[in-house]
Image 1 (cartoon, one colour):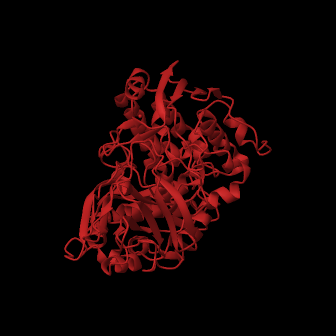
Image 2: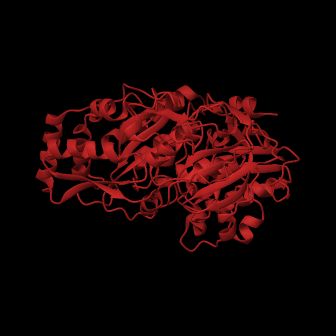
Image 3: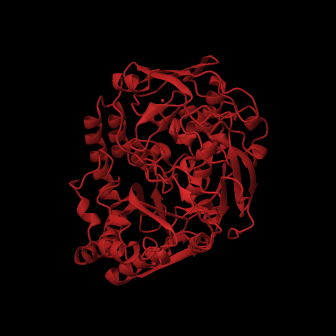
Length: 546
């Protein structure tokens, strides 16, 4: 899940054409962060997968892939869309047909050109289920996608809706209207790949060849990922520094200690232990701004007592109403998070405090007990309720807090389940092996409400094809998402998104908890700190006094 931010859905048809025509161990102090160069050392975590853009859906790999690759479009700090490798993206036939024109002169860091084939080959590879790429569902509206999801699909099979017209032109035919297609075009899933990626995918995932602001140097697993400024980059995000060193930590506290000791330049992961003090620490520069990330926990459909039925819905609602989000936000997040009122974040145009059924997100212990008792009348409760999390992140305190609320309100055995690393945790989530609920959340990939809802809860994103890791499937919800993507305006689309959210509030495939601010800290030598539309740091803007 990448730390980006959604603002609003871009309207279909002419509005899009007008917009886009013509956009392991803790780190060590003896890293490549040389004092005589403008290389910035930043907090990182071990990526869950090799560095293939289409298989990157979590923050550890996402921050790295963002810097290495450039797609058709980029997004500004307000979620506006600007052409990058694309010269234009034009729509026709009610947003079911797109023609993409590419700019000439782009090349990968191995010197080979970036062409229409670079994009189409990458999209076909990601969409084909034989390649087991986590972002396959991003292509679900392109003709031929369903054929690529068959169990016996040929690994070389391609999307029938994609045609390379010439080196600089791509023709895209969709199986349904998708007004968000040009917005999705800047996400990881849509990044181009060179021929070397397909000749030796295993090697490429460890040593990617890219076309973005930075050029890959090395990946020392559980230690660091280093990159330098790409002198051939032609896009909107030209680096103001000479390179980045993502120092990989298994504990945010260790990173913060390194920052205070001058052995790390920048972190956007503030540990719980520092939330009360980091903004007043005179030895650092602190940052706390509104962001678009959501914090949730997922209760997968396969857990006993939590199926998609009356009992499961009653239990999910009871658990949600057991949690005092406001108190936890005050006591643990100290002004860096706000209680959730829906499944989106406040800057999103479809965000609403008035959704029917949103009382399930409010603390109501007596109602929670009543709902739990109704569920017990259907099938008596047995066992324990656990919430898993990765111990190398910042979830420990809030997971333990909500487990205590659930335990005390419902009088059941509820406990937190730590897993040692993000890699271990995400591997179990991605493979559907979780035997408990688990912490979740979202940092959006592109500026559309579609990214929060379709990519996390639509049936097309389930079964390992996208971010729907709990395998929630509801035809009524899917239908609302289809209507939103077919809507001719943002206002009309938002109505369908909100109706879809009201279905989610009944079923609660994930329990919304808080929206997180963008928080960060740096040494006094760092300047240029800025955040993108999702509250993620703009690494290309960082500079360091020599």
